[in-house]
Image (cartoon, rainbow, N blue to C red; front, side, top):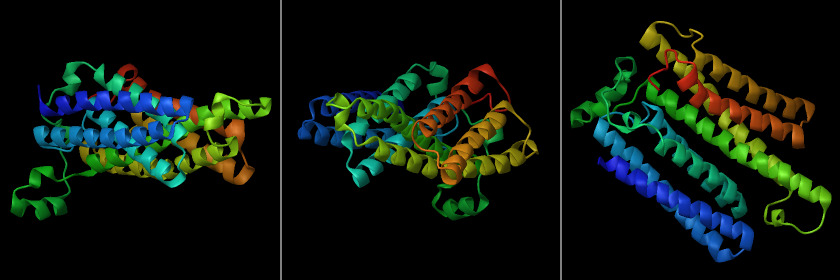
Length: 294
């Protein structure tokens, strides 16, 4: 078994333990459970980092070239984004939802056929490198690790997806928390911050992810021109990327100019992430196109 798959197996176990610990902290409200959950979230992040590093060493290129590798990148970015949010705002109960999303993503990646996990030669359409980086690394014999427009495109896009995944989890929490506040009394949702704070955190996550998605789309167009001689060809993945961008642009526009808050914003956030899921999984398997190799 190749080393990256060994690290992936450990990562799966770490994410399972992390999700269980955050759930325990949410339900039982024990401080030590929250502290242990955060520690395991860091361990899971480091383990996922090693999956990507090992994969790069085994393949000789950035580990973003297929569905399995980009899923690991998504999981890594979502974990890192959540830990930054927890460090800043100290709301550990949110980890119960975000880490469950992470665990489900790990499960989805693990269920992919082995052909997605095996190390394969890079598709010729993906073999582009930035010449200045090649020149910088070649004196030390590391030119094969130089990145190109594809690597930059995938990395920035999945940073955006991570922000949207966190916002999705927060939007789900908001809908339940808001109903709990309207009913009054004590409930299990008291472990979460108030609905207004959750709504604001969801907005910040989308505001953080949206520029990365925009940069990812633009850099993808540059790469497409390099690979296929056209910046835009209305390939299914390109089309759905644009649809996803419009949904989140509408969210930000409605919030800033029309004051959308609460349920309407939460539902639009959820719709946006469902578009991301279809863009990533549905298009890859249902609507094949130029991105079919993904």
